Image (cartoon, rainbow, N blue to C red; front, side, top):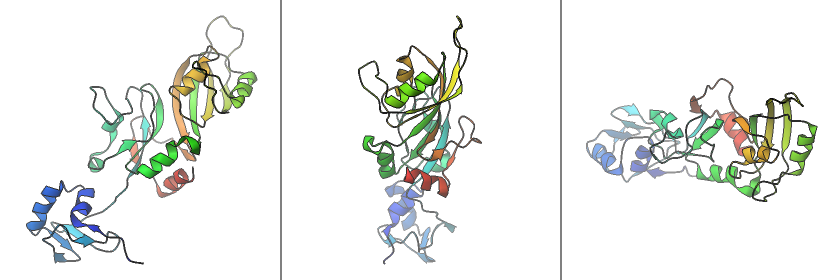
Length: 248
């Protein structure tokens, strides 16, 4: 099987060496070598898995696709556009800034937790496609007493305020709060859903007159949020994590 090849200018652009115009200039200046040979034509093809490419005698590391995991903090919107508000794109390290990364799905401004950023459109589509029903698990604090009756209701599907009936979900009670008290009590739960309607988790609890106080996504598919990542921390996915993500 022949090795996959790519144009030299595209190869260097993916590695962060500038625009096609800028790359054409450094190539003409004789700063680029392929397997030890100076190349002055940026349209030649190279095999990323076989050929050794250098710029100013420094070997170029080529990666077409990048996968980052962010523990999103509260107060940031999930958007690639600068609307005058802080966005999750601010957490992308400089070394990845030349990749056209985008967040996979959305988390509300006040929601924390697991958020993926990548330039792999196919993987993003697979994770977000409604027909795939990829599970997403959240840690939730609500201002009410959660009991077994809520577990049963969530497992049957919740009718939202617009009449939509959600898919069955799994509710696990971590701390039920106190029933029958006049003052507000808080329960802690984990909720796994298989779709992503607008403000879905908040609206599901609102159907019972409960307000979500705190919301954090802790899993997507088989991928768990790394407990060592503090809010705002970001890193590349490990190979085994990427494999779990692809398995759904």
